[in-house]
Length: 339
Image (tube, rainbow, N blue to C red; front, side, top):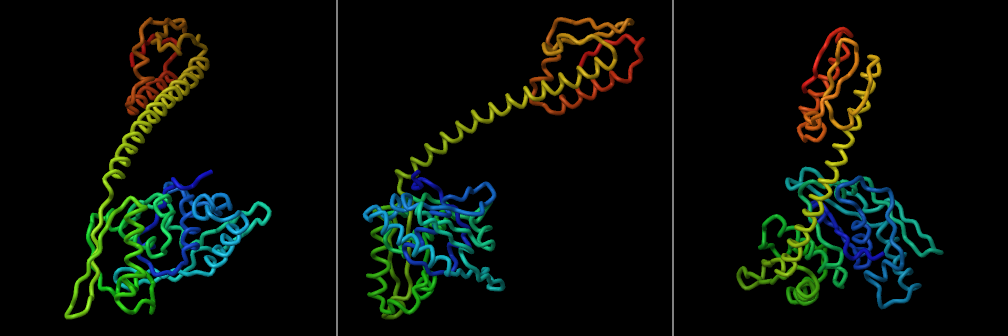
């Protein structure tokens, strides 16, 4: 089953964290994160098969070579760490992405278990998170392109279509280290390939400019925006989802009404039988009168049904309370129950 349309949810704390992953490790990690349900509890294990890996990333490789690369990436990912710190710098977390990796050499699958400390940053996220489709990064062949893409999606979701960084700070954010110390090398090996790939293969377009201090470039400026065709497609999908949700809610309400009606029927039936009365036609919503001989006369109208089908839960509770009062009446009383 293709995973390319899966959504990836990540806390912004992770997106701006310090970590270094190779391209294959990054792809594997994102393929597993895309299997996590955003609104549910995170599972214990996430499996990716060689067929899924080939579909996403290794389409030009044979099955055995793709599984070899999948195993190598999984082993390295198991050894990788991540460093997060609060804005104030007072709190820091050093942990690993995954705690365990398993391989099935016959089925050619890799199974990853996320570290407990990572789970809160990729599941059940209510705020301060970024989401995007796995398909938007499958054609990116630069690990820096993936990191920059995630950053601009995160900033854009926070209504920040422009960012300026000191070049040294931006290099630290990308975990470049001592590589590409010359500005020209940094531009040609990191920024230009990422710019081309993101503009060509993702749902965003962005441009880069640089600002000098004195005679040297010291700042990098990023301007970005979502491509209009993707904004339109997402708007259409959201309307479809709202329509489907509305239909689902209507169905759920109808089921709940039937459940309430059935619950009342059984409850009232027990009361009437306990009083030695005849029980009939309650399912049709008739109102009952108890006469001096404990017989029940049925009035042919549907006023009672209003309390079966109403959305007003308070009326329903008041109605049940009224029914409970029947038990406290003397058998000799004559009462009409108009609810």
